[in-house]
Image 1 (cartoon, helix red, strand yellow):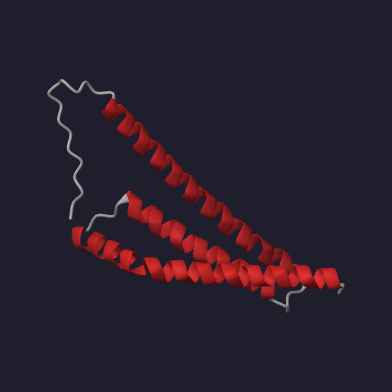
Image 2: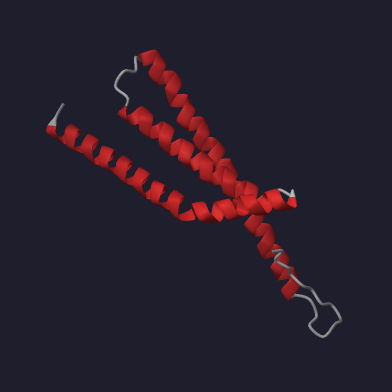
Length: 134
């Protein structure tokens, strides 16, 4: 292995370990919020779209990062196993992209809703309350 190749591999390895450290920190930082959301969903027996999308993007991202990093550091792959394994992170990244697109679509719907609210005649008798159930 050339010096340049070894250096680029080491940089890639450090970047992967760093990304796992950041993802782990983020996971631990937002875990209390997730637990509160789980309790709320359980208490009301109603699964909201926002919770479902939060849950899906959170755990597909963790799964993609874990599987891709395990494949990066694996040394015992033969050619056939490597070709099959290569499909797993790619497929998970497609799922992750689909979830992020669903999140963007829901945000777009929210912006559209609020733009319609602002276009209402303020002098009319329409009163709209947005309630955050607690």
